[in-house]
Structures are given as structure tokens and as C-alpha cells.
Image 1 (cartoon, protein in one colour):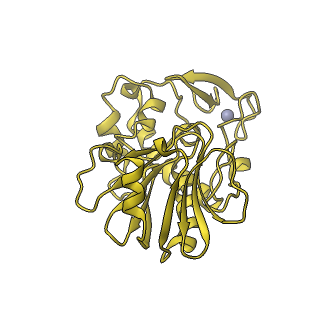
Image 2: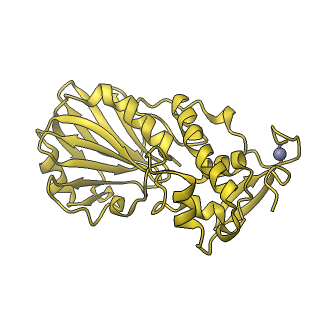
Length: 275
Ligand SMILES: [Zn+2]
């Protein structure tokens, strides 16, 4: 599932292709992936508009148009946003195609169809994308151990659920939550109320560099994730915990354990991340 580093990579790989291009037509093959306004309203609003800038907030990708409106995209599980030549065969489950004035296409594809598109008007209040409920970004200067402790320290949830809470910290998903907990030596099921100040410090120090190095590797492709040019990310071999259950810990050699935390598959080292 695309998390912050993957969405950031989609943004970075699409930007040079999209900025300055105009959307000439919008073809809605499966308009129900467009959640706001309706598919026809979306197509009308993006047609003829030039793309000015791409942005990211948490796991949301933003495409700002010269009208001041923004296309907001969430890829959820299996969504892809691809820049492709018109002659390049469309993958199955291509739901929206925005035709650009360079003859190429911006395609939204999604096998499982949990991904969504919205159009957020220039002066429109955002009450519908979910972005309005996001906490701070891990690269925000306000992000610190004190911030984590203040927002999570009294919560009756596990440490893993805490750092996954998008209303506290935007952008982490299952991969980087497991990686951050491993790097900080925090057991994923440790109640937030029992995480020490030193452990919050280790988490706050671990999270930004883990995300940065994944961005430098164009994100992690485990299954479905592709960047804006359809390429896989190269970060998978660098993961320490996620996806490595039953394999030896790269720090201590013990076998990594698998469990479930809040319904999510979780991998941790029973030695490096003691209860
Ligand atoms: Zn270990």
C-alpha cells in the first residue's frame, strides 16, 4: 500500500511530465472513483486547465490547476497514477484518463477500487477528502518526541496503532510503522501509556530518516505499488522488519516474530523490541 515515501515518489516522478501541461479532455471510464463533485462535474472542472504544481499531504497527492482548484488523489491499496503515451496499452482497471496537450495521458488505475479522486475548489472548504483531519507531517519542524508523547502518551492504544494514527502523524502505514518501531527498539504492542520518554525520542529520531531513505530509493514495491512512470520502487531490500517474519534479525540474529496489531500484520524482533 502506498505510504508517504511512495506518494512522494509518485509526485516527484510525475512532476516533470505534468507541470505546464494542459488537460484537454477527461475520460471517465468508471466515474464512481471520483468522489467529489460527480464525474461529470469533475471532468468539466479539469478540462482546459493547465497543471501548475504537484504536492503531497500525508498519503494524499495534490495536483494544483491554473484555476486554483486542486485534484486530490488517494491511492489507498492498489491505486496507481501513471503518465503514459497514448499508444501505450492501458492496464486493466484504468478508471479515469486525463488526456494532455502533449499527446500523453494521466491515468488513474486501481484493481481494488478503494482509491479515490476529488476536486477541491479554490475557495472550497475541505469537508470530504479526509485531509482536513490529518496531523502533522514527519518532516514538519514541530514533529518531535514531545509532540508524540503529548498526543499519544495517554492514549489507550498500542505504540504501533499510535504512530499509524493519521490524525496525529500523517503518512505512516504498515511498512514504515514496523520499520520505525524496529529502529527505535519499541515492541509494537507496547501500550502508548508505557512508552518511555527515551523511546518516544528514539521513535521521533527514527521516523524521518527511514522515510527519507525510502524516498531516495523511489519507495517500496511489495506488490502493486508503481511510481508515476510505472516503475517499481527499489527500497524493499533495505527493510529491516516489514515482510521479514521468520527471517533472522539483521541486528541480533534472532528470528523475527509475526503477530497482528489492531488487525494489521506486524513483524518485530523479540530481542531488539522487548515487551
Ligand atoms: Zn533483533
